[in-house]
Image 1 (cartoon, rainbow, N blue to C red):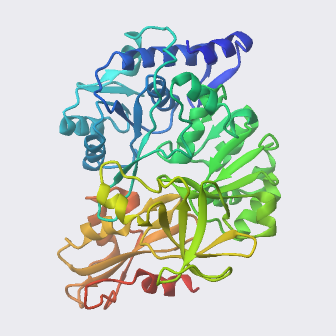
Image 2: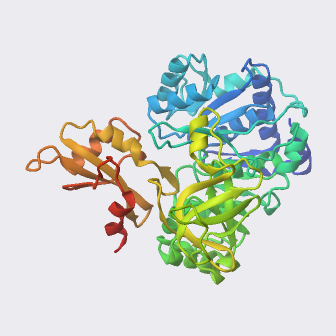
Image 3: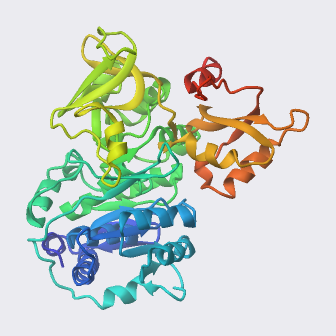
Length: 508
């Protein structure tokens, strides 16, 4: 078994190392699976990019596939398990993955993606493996239970973000979030330096195709036990905290809202005092929600604002937040926050403008397969924006007030309206359409379609528009509501001011 697992198995032979709703695994079991997984992958001819896709819901096997890939010097590609077959196929092909790991819920779509990409190796868990797939246990059994070599070079994940033109963009896990190192030994030592590693068992509640949960899950190979939950259930999360005495987790504001919605007697049933750090990411949190969470769990929150492409650009502790409520924090090295006016000039403190960041390393945002998109993300070398409008106060704390990009953040997931718009404009009863983010009590934001009908006297119904989109696109990318309108405000160049369209919905 990997050396870290062997040491821990000897010291704590009965301790839970990895748990999901179906089983608890001790360190010896985890070590054997990782050994066999890494051995199989080390013997596979990947080509120079050494990429494999993991297309499955949260489970122990999902984590072990990613981590076995890491130990074998592979770049693993997390594929959103909500995606349609064609959407998944695009990511598998674009990433040049050579193996797909999947589960019962995704196997049909995985096989479609494998055929499209010319992949022969599809490994599945969670049920009866259909023709064209190999059961995970069978696949592992062919591997050797020996320590993977420590001189293997670690490779970062390739993550896919929604694209403004309808196609997702691949971006490698940035240096601010990848432990790096010239070999696996150095990499594992660096992982152990992660601020979450010494806090005890880590709880994974978000889907592992998101950067935060994916990063938290990697702590297992630093010797930190992991508890993985499936689709979010508020009471089950509290029960897991109490049962496993978890010390850290990563959450988004939607998790907070759902936890706070539990009846007081349910919340009081569970002991959450083991939690030492809750990393909040994904979206700006409403002030009152954050106050209630601090009152309940204590000042254990650390907010991170950033993106998959660059990692954390700003961070703030609970104590700082209470002094600067609503802030997303101070810019973190190697980043510096800049607020610019429409002419590109820096504005004084407490003045609203477009929020940019300067990366002292000069890297900024990189899309490996799209140099044009990489260039578009910058206004100068290493100076980029995440699409927000905001200001910086006299103490250097950053506040977000609006968004000048079209992106919608719903439940911590980024949605680009262009994807739904490209689908809906094909509807025979729609003459024009614009999709925007509007307030949602649970998800923070939700996508709304503003539709100009071909026949104003006989417009399509909301149900029809949503169903049309969902037949062609993953459900979370589709509008949750539809308004019939006379205009979407296109100018003579055909452009739409989404900020103007959003304003009436947010003003209340």
